[in-house]
Length: 145
Image (cartoon, rainbow, N blue to C red; front, side, top):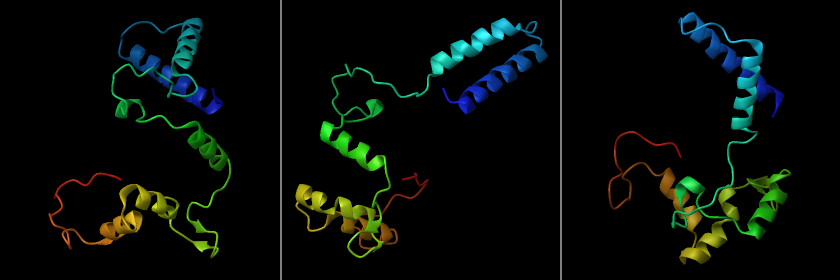
């Protein structure tokens, strides 16, 4: 476990113990008891909170379980690109800023049969609400994208 995370965990534990004692809910715990609690919390928290699980729900694309599995090829490419800088918004041909959607435009067009699905979606986002839409956009609280 990284030192900063362990330090934060111990500080939270000590703050909770102080509150417990100040609220009159018992005598202060000894150093050994606090150390044991810190070790137990660190083991429970682990280094990462995400863990592999078995999907026995019968639902293949289960939102709570990370949706769909990634293919070995996708994982291999993600690892290769994620381990270095990448041309996410850089057009290598022009050496200028590009669009992050350029990497999926062809795939979306093939998948949907549309001429250019990604560009159409970008244009739709730029339009003011209700401009050219068949149905008005819902009013109210806007959710983060």
